[in-house]
Length: 256
Image (cartoon, rainbow, N blue to C red; front, side, top):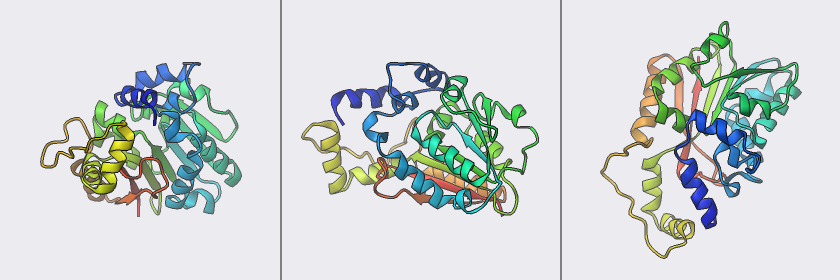
């Protein structure tokens, strides 16, 4: 990652729903930058990300005629992979995002677009309670965490899952605790020097609050919240070839 991409990563760290709307309309940005990533973290990598998504949500390609919901799909290659999988399997897919992001995605009879942030757009999802087979929410949850309320988002999404196996992947969740553990290792120190371009070791900062960041406590509280609501939930690792596997994890939920 060069200095310009490091600058972009810092600028993208604090985006809001309105901030993403502004990025989506900028013709001077790549499709990856419009979703808040430097090119080096997504260009040529979204096929591998999709492979991981479909491995964790096997119903997406193993079954036909499902109802699929993608919360915050953005406008890069990843939603194109998901949309194509839905077309091939005869699924209906519902895309929830800003008008600007949705305008960059294709229109087709099996695609339904709903404008607005989730769960504020819940009235447009009326009738889907307990009717959704697969929910994908990728690289979104940390922005929800910043805007709040996190449990309200989770509860609304879980309420859409179909009993008997409806599944949701909340993917690519930053974990400050995981990042600290990584930076405390020799591999993490080498990564830090390469990333920053400076010959200095990182300071992991154990035993201090993760102010403004998601950490083990936040992720595990979401697992506990889901399980208390009658939904099975697990924290899963990302495969090592994904761009941020050393500091991000996935949450998988399934309604029995």
